[in-house]
Length: 107
Image (cartoon, rainbow, N blue to C red):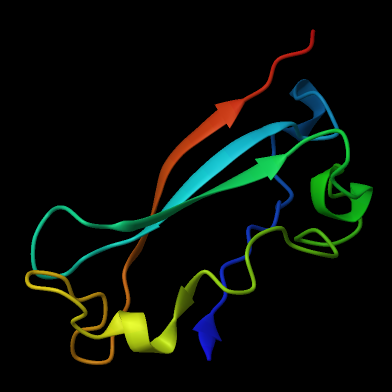
């Protein structure tokens, strides 16, 4: 019924230089393929109540045990042209973009 979007933290070579657990906001957009506006955007927040499985440093695997994001990012019906000039699904393809990663700096 819906498309889900989840952000998973991944292990990286500079992780030792970062503060953990991750705190901040990741802005993700599903792109409107007909024109450069009316993108479907969602902010995924990592804060002090985010489970450590989603926000902690990844050390034993390549990615976190669980992701963070909406299980109902956009309905299947909304993927197809819903109003003039808007279509997220073209030729069986969806395009997502990470618009920004805003870090909360507590240090």
